[in-house]
Length: 255
Ligand code: ADP
Image (tube, rainbow, N blue to C red):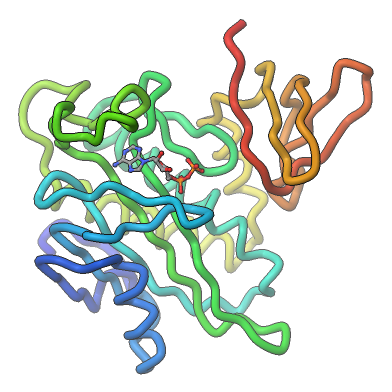
């Protein structure tokens, strides 16, 4: 790939016309000992995956649907922060290549004009307190025609092409995302995730906002204060107590 400046990320690339899910392809390659940094890119996914068995709509030639294999030496409990790191890398690349102000909704939703532009799904294989590998799947809507999007997703979905004039160079964007994934990953491995979380704060639209939290066990509203060193969201409830949100859906309420 002409524009790529990485040391190991994307140096092995598997390119497929059609896959069920690029994460699934890469997990199979990982089990056959594929190299650290291997990337699988697909023109289309017929069974693209989101979190919690949700789907990711990935029509042919209209997006960047790809996954990255990483073999980090940090502990499994650090892995959720790779999702935040990936969102930071994607937002920075999109801002630079496409000149649009993508933002991050906690933890890893990349939005443009309040609508969903990117999906990120990190999967981990770990045993005995050690990570075998991580697969980070990223789906970026580059030029999905609005009327092609399934009706139920349409109001909340957006593509880069909806916000920019002219053609988006998919290869240049992919190369930039991989460049930033590697450089932020190198920082995280060297210094920990602190600098990455700072960059995440800069790109966040969640912090300082009124939010509604739907956690597995309860639902409440409050103000999103900050993320802690684990990447969890701290929400101050109306009664003044602070909750730490590890998982759950957080929606931003209109002011
Ligand atoms: P969530 O947003 O619920 O955390 P994910 O980030 O995993 O979950 O994304 C999956 C959800 O995104 C799906 O349930 C669907 O509502 C929506 N979705 C699926 N495909 C697309 C797409 N190409 N563009 C925007 N939104 C999509």
